[in-house]
Amino acid sequence: MEPVILRGEPAKLASLYGYGYGYGSGYGYGYGDGDGSGSGDGSYWKATILAFAAKWPREVQAKFEAAKASGATIAFWRSSKNGLPSNGGGKIEPAAPGVIHTALGPLRLCERGTLHATLIPPKWNGERYWIVALWGEVIGDDEKFGCLKREIIGEAL
Image 1 (spheres, rainbow, N blue to C red):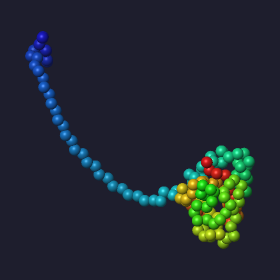
Image 2: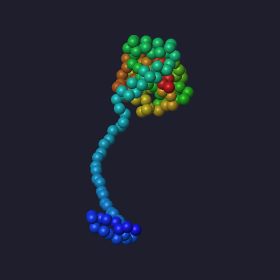
Image 3: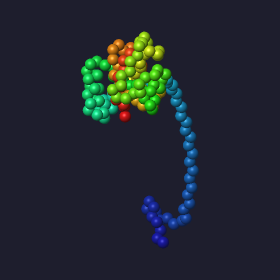
Image 4: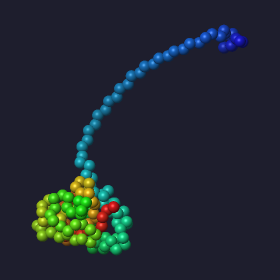
């Protein structure tokens, strides 16, 4: 073989060996904390109502629009798979579009005699989600509403 020229000088070829090693170390640190219930203010769920309503038959959509135009409070209610209360409610007609539930009162949250609804449905038990119109006097906040007349508008599918 011909000699290899490196930097202008002849060099002899030789066997080359190599090895290497490395090491490293690292560390990290951080801190933080937080808390919260994760319940939100209901704005996400409220925004979904129109998307659910768009899937209903025209006559149910018309009833929904009429309820909104009349000033009804629109919210969610959860039921068992059979359309019955899942959160301790009394005996009522199973939920279906057009069914109207009424209660004798007195109108007090978290008590029998009051019908309930919410804008945060995952906080409550139940297998089915319904969109309802609350008529008349409505008490509560975005987490939980109470009324004496609740109309089932349609199922949130």
